[in-house]
Amino acid sequence: MVIAGVIVFCILLLVAAFVFPRMSRHPERAGKGVMGVGSRAGGKAPGKLGQWLSKPFQSGSKAMGKSGDAGRKGRDKMPL
Image (cartoon, rainbow, N blue to C red; front, side):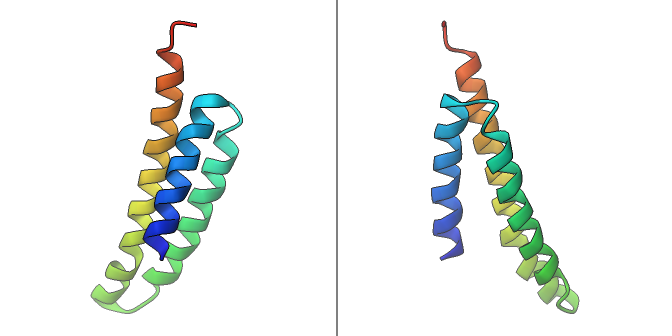
């Protein structure tokens, strides 16, 4: 379920970053903040379990950053 949510959020962020490059930074930071909370909560588990539980949230945060960046770069390359 988390994976589907991250995918949908990344797609929405990509479109928002392409259409409104400056306004897309706030939703991107908010999404990364939510992922950071999940990562920190998962990381409190002992040993390797903590690493395994926090990894999906870290990967999701990285994907959100790449998605927003790709949308803004695409907008920069437009001939307008």
